[in-house]
Image (cartoon, rainbow, N blue to C red; front, side):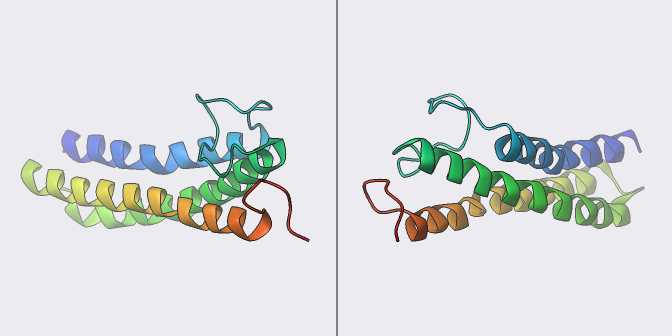
Length: 126
C-alpha cells in the first residue's frame, strides 16, 4: 500500500513541477537571456523580445497543462490501489512516460508561435 502512495506522489510531481515551473516562466521569467534557466531554444534567444515572448507563452502553456494533467494522474492511478508492487510500478511508469511526453510535446506550439510571430532575425512580423 505504501508503494501506491509513493508512486502517486512521484507521478504528481511532474504535474506540480509544470504548474510551478510554468508560473515562474510566465510571471517571473529571467530578465536576461541565459543558458541556465528559462525557455531556451535558438529561436527564443535571438533577443529580449523573443525571450520574453517564449517564456510567457511556454509558461502559460505549462501552467495550464500541469493543472489539466494533475487530476487524470490521480484518477488513472486509483484503480491500482491494493494491487501488487509490480503492477503499481508498471502503471506508474506508464503514467510517468505519458506525462513526460506531454511535457516535451508542449514545446512544439511555443516554437510554432515564435516562428509565426518573429522573423528569422528575431524582429516581429508586421
